[in-house]
Structure formats: C-alpha cells, structure tokens
Amino acid sequence: MSGNLGLNEHHHEVVVNYLRFSRYLRTQNLKAVDSGFQELKDSRLTEDTFTADEVSEMLDGLQVVLRGEVETELINNTHTNVLLLRQLFQQAEKWHLLLQANISELENRELIEMIANFEDQEFSGKAATAKPTFEMRKLNPLEGGGVQLLQNEIDRLTSENEKLKARLQQVEAKASEAFKDKSQLEADLQKTREELGMARNQQPSQASYDTSDLENQISSVKSEMEKNLLLSSTKASDLQGNLAETAHKLLEVQEQLRWSEKERDKKFSQTGAYKNLKSMLQTKNKTIKELREKLRQYEADD
Image 1 (cartoon, helix red, strand yellow):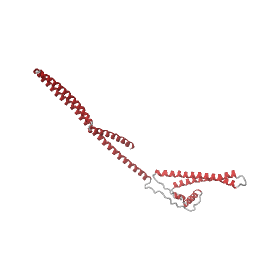
Image 2 (cartoon, rainbow, N blue to C red):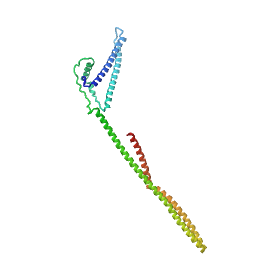
Image 3 (tube, rainbow, N blue to C red):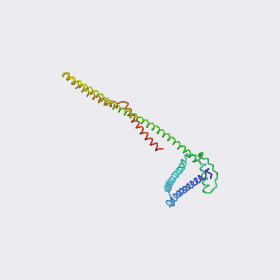
Image 4 (cartoon, rainbow, N blue to C red):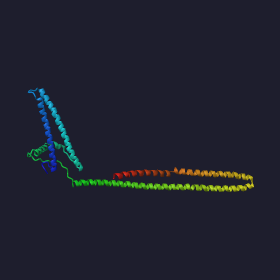
C-alpha cells in the first residue's frame, strides 16, 4: 500500500496524475481570472477619478466576463469527471463487477480536507498535519479472482450449449416422427391406389364376361330363329323382334356398365376416407417443410 489513501501503488499513481491534471486546470483558470482583472485595469483605469456609475459599470462588465469563464470551466470539469468515471466503469464491466459510489461523501468536509492535505503533501513536499484514515466502501474480492470469473463464464456458456443441444434433439425427434408419418401416409396412399387400380381392372373383365354371355344368348336366339323360320314365318317375325329387343338390351347393359364404372370412380374420389387421406398428406408435407426450416435455423445458430 502507498500513501494515505488506502490504495495500491498503481491506483495511488492514477490519483496523483489526476490531481496533477486538476492542478494544471486550476492554474489556467486562475490565470484567466487574473487576465480579466488586468485587462480591466489596462483598458478602463486610465483616469484618476471615476464616478460611482462608472465603477459600477466596470464591475458589472468584469462580473459578466468572470461568470462566463467560471461557468465554462465548471461545466468542463464536470464533463471531465464523467469521462473518468466512464473509463472506470467500462473496465469494471469487463469483469462483471458493479462499482459503488456514495454521492453524500463528496460533500464530507473532513474527507475533502484530507484530500487537500494529501495534495499538499504530494506536490509541495510539506508534511501532513494529520494522517487521514479513509473508510470508503470497497468491493468484496472474488474467490479465485480472474480465474473464477472465467470459470463462471465458461459454465454459463456450457449451460446455454446444453440447452441448445436439447432443443436440437427435440427438433430432430419431431422431424424423424414427421418423416415416419409421411412414409406411412405414402404407403397408405399407394395401397389405396393399387386397390383402386385392381377394382378398375376387374371392372372390364366382368363387363366382358357379361357381354360374352349376352352374345352367346344372341347366337342361341339366332339358331332358334333359323330353326323356327323353317316352321313358321309368323314365328320368324316374332323371333326377329326378340332378337332386336335382345340387341337393344345388350347395348343398354354395356352403357350401364360404363356409367357404373364412371360413377364408382366419382364416388370414390368424393369419399371421406379419400379426402381425409389427401388432407393428412398435405398437412404432413407442410409440417415437414416447417420443421426442415427450423432445423436449418437451429443448425445455423449452433
């Protein structure tokens, strides 16, 4: 420890340098005040006698000049002190420290006299009249110093990293589940398409079967008709009518089969199962797209 301020060598030297800077500013301010009085003497005090009004006018002018000079220097002194405090606070914040300032102690006359005595002792070489005993509040030292601060920061970053990893695992699990659901939906859709294709393939086979049966019937009718033509012309005419009617029925059956196939396809596309399956597939595709976007964001953050 050095001096009477209760500070280490480095901080003691910083205080002395600041006092030296303040003394320089104070000297310049006093020179400005002396210059103002001297200028008044040289410019106005050229006669032997002055009236009261003239003296009052000179003093008012001098007051304006000195007031402006003193106000400017006081403002500059305040701003200089703020810059000094800013430097100290910035250095403390790098180590996550919170400095304390007791503003009430700035008007403590006893402490101010101690600082004045300390300044005289440092710059004039005079012996101190009394040894000051400062009892200013100090920061409690951290256990381990800078190492402990670094360890605290490492622990904080490690904790945040673990949280990000946990969130990433959750997103990956959701993405995997979405992929499984999509695969299942695609399999269900494929199965449904295959069943639909089988149904369509079976439909023409049944239709051809019915047509062949009808054609056999027509052939049989023709044979019967030819036989009956030999028996009776009246019966032949009836048989021809029956043949035309049977042919007409054959065409109706074929038309009904085509209409039935179209109607069945239309009804299947309008069923709730088909619509639900299509809606589920669209929803899953949208969810997978959103999860992929989030996954890319988390990977970029990590």
